[in-house]
Amino acid sequence: MPTKAVCVLNGDVKGTVFFTQENDKAPVVVTGENDKAPVVVTGEVSGLAKGKHGFHVHEFGDNTNGCTSAGAHFNPNKQEHGAPNAAVRHVGDLGNIEATADGGVTKVCIQDSQISLCGPNSIIGRTLVVHADPDDLGIGGHELSKTTGNAGARIACGVIGLAKS
Image (tube, rainbow, N blue to C red; front, side):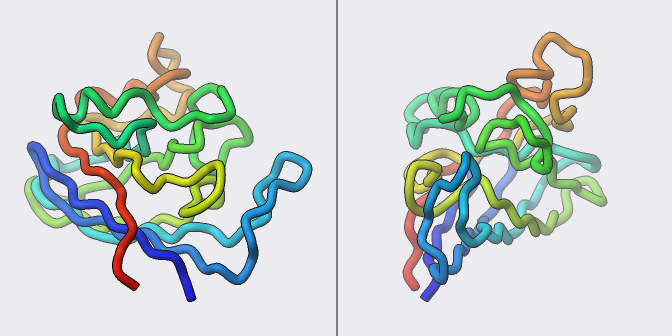
């Protein structure tokens, strides 16, 4: 039976994002790579401006001061910021979601093999953040490219929690 999690996003935009990970392989670290089933991330975000928006898991499940108290990107391996398919990236770097029209509903459909719903890379209890600007995936040349992807303000966030199976 798969492990499931959910995040309700609140802020300038709203949404609900679901996370599913099959339990057919136990999370085991082998030669630095996680030998586990990928996490499938699906859902919808409404109210985004047209274009790409950074989409990241941040280190803390603390939203007491809005999205600011969620801390930096989830980065247990102390890497530089990068694209979801890059060899060097934060665990929480999920890239961008793209709104095709102003204020409409943006579908989320991502598969990622670095985040997990169990073990050392677990995102349970951490915060999912939607940013105002595109994530430059660490290659934009801006002073913030290697830390945040220069993705701009945090426009919505929510704590990732276990979902009812």
